[in-house]
Image 1 (tube, rainbow, N blue to C red):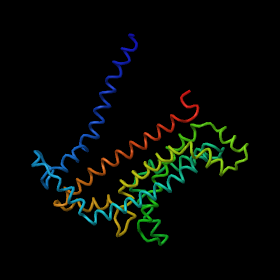
Image 2 (cartoon, one colour; image 1 turned 30 degrees about the vertical axis):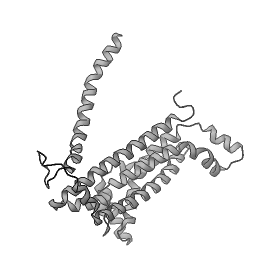
Image 3 (cartoon, rainbow, N blue to C red; image 1 turned 45 degrees about the vertical axis):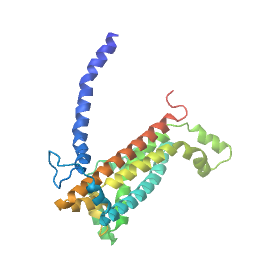
Image 4 (cartoon, rainbow, N blue to C red; image 1 turned 90 degrees about the vertical axis):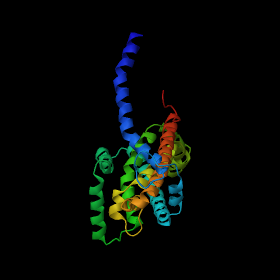
Length: 272
């Protein structure tokens, strides 16, 4: 009893620190939806009056809609290709004895630690040297590069969690490697795949630096928002859009992590 009380008391400073840290991160962000309902061009206290006209302005903004569709297309393509590469990569490093496995995984994970501006400049130089015109395709390529490590990190845990003998049993029953993957492996790792898709889409949708260096005349939504910040009269509409993106991003990330945790919990033998 005394030991439990001591542990609880020793954890109080850590919990206090965690709460202060979360408040420092998220309280400023929570002011965004608050100001999106303020009937004023300026972000100031006290609030002038309640209004929803900035959301109506946002819905009537055609260039914003075009940028939003660009971000959705780039995000969907980036999430799909990054997850496909992540599936093959995670299966390779967890199922086979590869020479130089650790250096390979380290190289794949490098975009997590290299500053985005360095990656953006490097890819811009590469595209110009190869004569590839900047477009949404080059933005997608850059986003795939930074999303693959997140996909791998999500899927490696999933592949390492279930019993390999299930694949061996499928092979003993006559399935080749391809059919064993589709009939046995894919259904088991599907929650992880879905979590990877949602996570990679969110990362690509919110990404700015790669899009800044690799986009052309078709801006993604973060690039469009950055361009609108120069005009005070358009700031409230941007704040309204930011509030919507904040809510949607939170829901997508929450669902992806819930699916990932649910998938791990359903792995046969997990938790024993």
